[in-house]
Length: 189
Image (tube, rainbow, N blue to C red):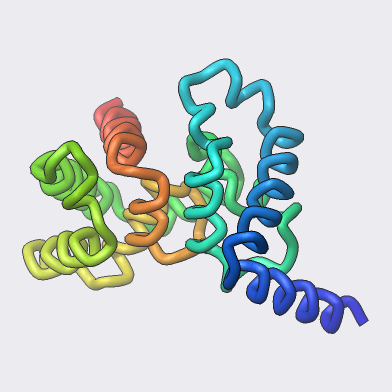
């Protein structure tokens, strides 16, 4: 019975995202859920833009095919709202399957390539990000899975989620660069 309700709820959410008013309704529900889950953590940082309607709309559109309930977004996809918790059990488990060499090399290359993009976000588009990722795969000779898992670890800290390029586009270039630098600092320790 729960599976059927989840499926119906997902279909309802997908339908709502097709109209401007429906998406606005979902944004308002998500905003309340994010405030409830992360309220103080967002107020105390300059990350409160993550409560803006446009950002929340982008989050919803990025993950709409993967969710069944708006209230599960803050827990399942907290990396959209707060920095990844690299010390969590899930993050440590993911980190164990990524070699230091691949993580460092991928981090260094993605940092350089993203830094080379214009700061106005005009070049920070999904197709460009995918092209950069493909270029890193070709340049290093690493398997696609190795590079994507490294990037997923850097950007989200967890094993599953929306597409890596889509997630990077949604959270923005500045946040990506900060997370890459944080991982690189941890590798230098």
